[in-house]
Length: 126
Image (cartoon, rainbow, N blue to C red; front, side, top):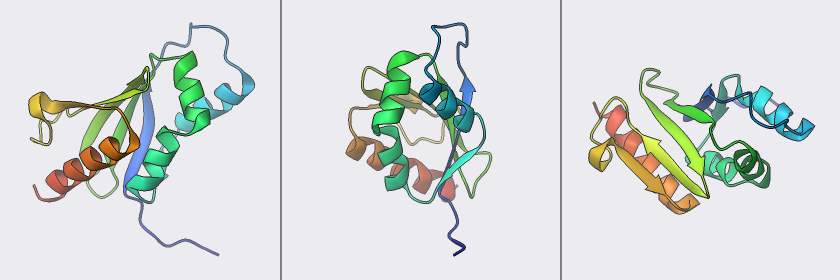
């Protein structure tokens, strides 16, 4: 069965320090996947992924990974995304007015979902 839903968000690795400690096969496979453009059908799907055991484990082993989150419909609208010590930081380099001082730190899935929804509403209404 073909899923004809349009994704909401995209995610790709923007940068990471590959000289860090050796990665497990599981982490290397996840990094390889994230090096290509990944898409998510909903913000809830994205938040579930960010707080999944595999992603949390990867970020614990290599916290210097920076990602770019994009709006699937507004390809030029992006956020920088980092996760360290359980906190997710979103940085709006385009200064859309979604966050105070163009940055927000989220401590759980609900906060992340709220802030991503707010950002998407802003970029789709520009």
